[in-house]
Length: 319
Ligand SMILES: [Ca+2]
Image (cartoon, rainbow, N blue to C red; front, side, top):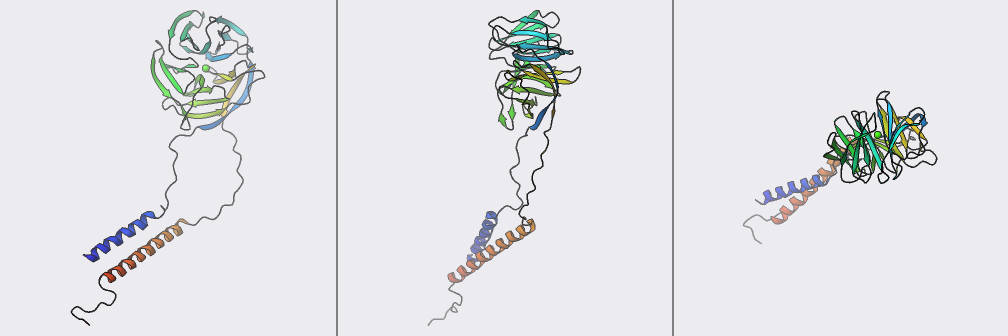
């Protein structure tokens, strides 16, 4: 019975030693999220943009360029000549309305207002208002994915709205490298992603519309023209495949594409030779065996003491 208990103690001690030993070959923490791919903007040339245009929305319709401009008392919906930058036609919003994002659903334009809570529908050919919708909160950017309208309001949450009734149907939180990304502004569908420029930055992101994860993190710095304010305005011309961006009061609109940054080779570092894994394993098991043997010796020594020492007198004898 005594030997059984010591044997159990020996097994327990051995297991403890093994458990405290380092985990050989354990993997490091894996990233639990998708990191965005870092991209740069490639400038393929530019055209004139109206210096008076406080751009809030930019969109192509059958190869024709349309723009929404903001600022109380100066807000417009306009069609612009892409080659010259001249305004072909324009309608003004009321002086108490601040124009925001716009997009197309078939042959109708939908234009948001900032804090006025109203979205206007226009006939693309006449610019006549053919309807309007109301909503709560602010209106920033607007896009149409062919099924639903997608609206930003300056937060990290995108709103999906019915393209006919404008009713809110669902929302989506946007994250960049596992952190919420707010201030999403002007929007554009491009290659199955939603592009958004981030307010007060020179950053454009490409958002997966199922997960809300930013998969493209695009550096669009260096394009702002003298006297211009922030980057705002992305438009994809489906007839040519070209992509255009501009900003508030920018004098130019740029034809761009995205590319991976050039990889600068890192200097060669001579690393300390690593101990082979096999050697680590051998060292680990050597230590474990040594520890087990020590526990065994201590246990045997204790058993002998309990039973009367190393040379106990024979039973029945007395001095
Ligand atoms: Ca747009």
